[in-house]
Image (cartoon, rainbow, N blue to C red; front, side):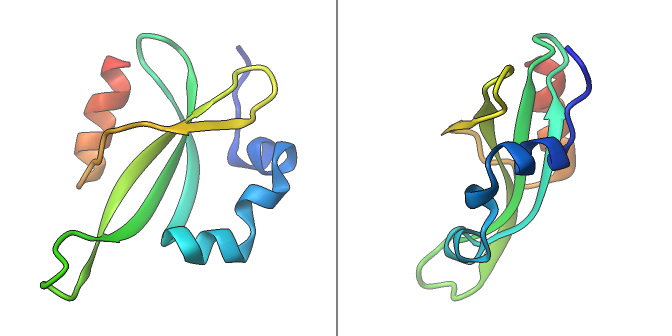
Length: 95
């Protein structure tokens, strides 16, 4: 499959990247990464979330959504939560 960029995904699904969605989900940065074994492209999001309701500080982490490899439609949010870039890279190499 050809190289897919975040610009390609944004063009395919503009409404998903609205400022309202970004604020609602706490997303800070979007990117597209390719899995090592499958060769599939994924939407990677650097986002914030509350790790502890009583801590009072949101924590940055990475989340991954599936991408339809033909239409670039954003699919389900995968279960993994990756606290660091290294954790994300390890997962991407394995998938």
